[in-house]
Image (tube, rainbow, N blue to C red; front, side, top):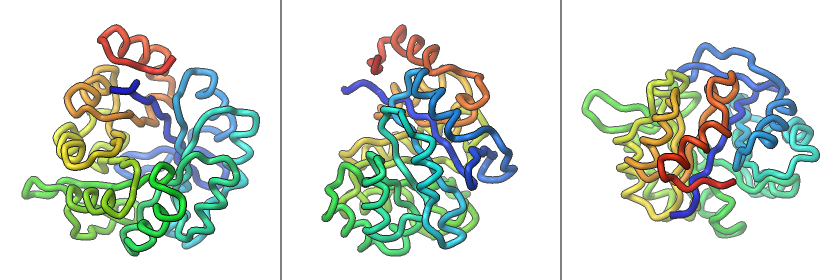
Length: 252
């Protein structure tokens, strides 16, 4: 198994990083430039920038803010939010992004996901899914910041997305987002068993053991988090040292 990736996530509104709980109670955190520099120096393996209002506001992501934040930083990064055309993807890749994250546009138009993978290959195309567990024990895919239930089963949508060409899956538990009670291990196991591409856990990390459980129990390829990194509750160095002590392969 390749080394697991540690990925801080920077949710952005305009030129500020923000964070909420269950996609609500959005609070200001810091500037993307300061955080990107901090994470690059701290040993992060990748960064993810999400322009969280771009899709709802029907606009393109603010690539100028992201480019400014990454100036002089040699670290792979992914851009998400408001990417709805092949030209949008090309613009992200041309400004230095390694990957793009597709969510709402892929749900509304699966042919777009297929066309993106056909043109750029699967490696840069990440399918992000925002998921809630329903009263019947299954998981539903949501749109519009977790407010609109698509009625799609999360496992089936992810399988379909990979068949269409997605090269990586980010699974974000809305119920766990910002709550720091641990990742949804059952959901992650189901998705990891269903697809043959890398799966990244998101939503719920609160302590070192939460990362370990996702890696060992669900066998995810990467762990994404925001609050615990942004607020200094867990350092990436401490996390990597902890995982290494547990026999987990991490990048140095």
